[in-house]
Figure 1: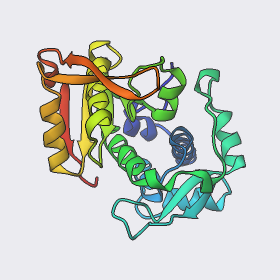
Figure 2: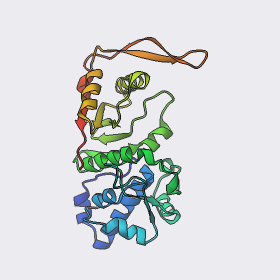
Figure 3: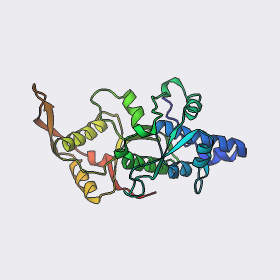
Length: 260
């Protein structure tokens, strides 16, 4: 699997390129990023290229490779971008010419079909991923779209998986606290993702300290979490307890989100 959007010591790589080649590399990086996530914000795209202001994103819009769409709550709700960027058909064609067969994903060209309720969540996931790309050991990442394509039935699907060195780190963005069945299933799913080897570590991020504290306490070895199953009438009911393995808390990092 080629995880793309690789770090590859980007500064050294770019230093050996001509200005024209550097510009092309940054454009391809931005287009692939939006392809993988489905959309992005101008600030994220410009940060990927090290641009100040609207340099790269504005240029790609003017060239007809991206389209800019104003959001419903942008500028009103904290964390929701005022505008989003999506690929035009021309931009999509450009990206797909760069990809291997196993990297192809279905892409929605209509920006109005993007779920506005998840923009804040998606922007946080993109920002933390863009920030960690500067790590020397960062190799690449898989977005939720990519994970869904290859995941086995019943396996926890993280918001994004980072590949850092030899480790796979499952990232969960939790902006609203889960309760009851969804909470229990989340905790068990995260634990099983680690114990099965699907990921080596879990990185849980929230902008609410209370959520971080509660989830961190739950993801502790020895805790017993209710298992939920559907009965013959398709109603959910508890059926026994799942005991979190000892020491699992050492593989869980919880951190408060900061606007990188």
